[in-house]
Image (cartoon, rainbow, N blue to C red; front, side):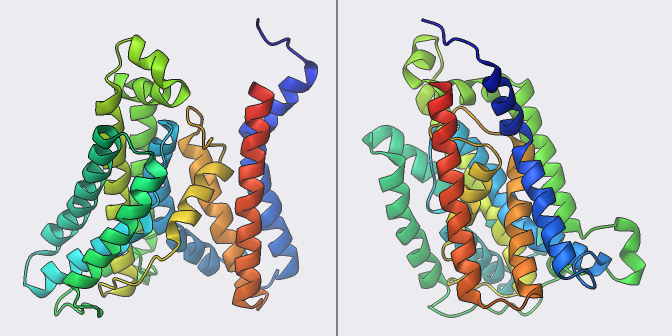
Length: 326
């Protein structure tokens, strides 16, 4: 039986689409009123844009994974692993572009392993990626000999997330932000205009139905985990760009921020729902709140409570959407 349309459904759908944007505007307005002398300055806006790159890029990959009905808890470990790979190759004297490509490739390999274990062993993604989260983190520590890897030459990579100098003001935002924007356009185009994108949504909406319709579900799952981990690898390159060292202990818990950004942006943990624009807005909300708390000189434990509350609220809203759509 078809669900009876109600007038409230229209407004619920409007809020479902525009809610993240409204929430971002409200959060910005609150901090703009609280700290008007510093929050909306060009310097702070650029800083928030730079700070969004790591979570934003990783969240774009996570969007594809969650759309397909999966989850990847190893994203934070992959970011750390990628940063160590980049630093190690630079220390060996390899070109910067090769080191950056290897960082992304290392992430993709981790994703392929996740996808293979999930599809071949028929183990739920939560358990598999929980295990690989520890494996990848351990591998990063092993390569780095449990210490930071400080390369001799870092070339142009630190410029990706560095504040713009006078000679680069024409770029408006640092190159890393442009990389995030280009990646967002690419992911949105793939999801909207390609057969693979339609298959991703179909698998996340109803895996059994997708299989009956001829979708190669296992291939799609392996592909989405490879894409998600490659994005985390690219985020690892940005992490190295910010720190200029490979640190196997960074990005602990980053996967929670990444998943929260997707859910805040309208993604459903049950799969089949989500958007690239919503994900970027969700990542911005996380960054704005962190920056605003810093401007208000709130202690770190307060920021953690606020972030945790946002994650709980995002999941609650996701459950509400599921009940409304049932």
